[in-house]
Length: 324
Image (cartoon, rainbow, N blue to C red):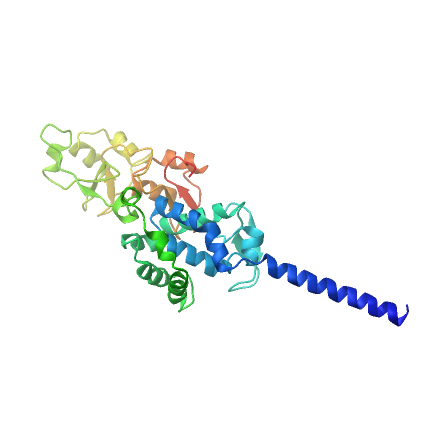
């Protein structure tokens, strides 16, 4: 091959590399373009869950490098959420450790929705929803304190993006939309005192011990020495009936302070508690008792059995799954 031809080939290769690099640069989204593309999605998620749209957009910008990260481009993962019990498609990337597992979505909307669920239905983030949805600074520092990211400047980074891009404007919902926001997770789960009126089946029993309700279902806190047989007599129930209310097939010892339902649990959880993100050591039975939902309903909604072992990070449906 002549030197002239070699020079020509080298020039062609360099030109191709330069053209490819230029094309790659042109495909990259600016932060403003990214926000314009996904602002509507963030507002939709705010209306559905109560998470400030400004926080969602700032997190997405930061975690996905304005939609240009490998995770965003190849897996539609805009928030860097790792697998943690994920049953869908996955992708492997180096992060805190090499070859870590990340969630992969069919489209960006799924990623934004999963991010909302990740915050809304995880116990560690529940206190954030008590904050004013327009207080993006409190939300940013709350996320950092709850351990969303390891960076000590995470909150400051979110606030800087929000203020540079004026994202707080997306948090301004009209009165109707604001009133339609779901109850906060803590309010939705909170128990209430129950004072039955004379003539109610639980009235006499309520005179000797406190009765409370969760999800509209009455329960008592067991005392030292309580048994299901004794409680059944106290509440004018058959023992097997009381055991059934608590999803038990046989008599078991009761410990002091244990929650015991004296009415049948419901088929679905309270509004605002559609799902639960599993923490270490949790069981399907424990969630059934916590949310006053029949164990067989939870099994049905999640394709599980009462004995299924739950992996931390797994999302459990507490109501019949509905599309949003």
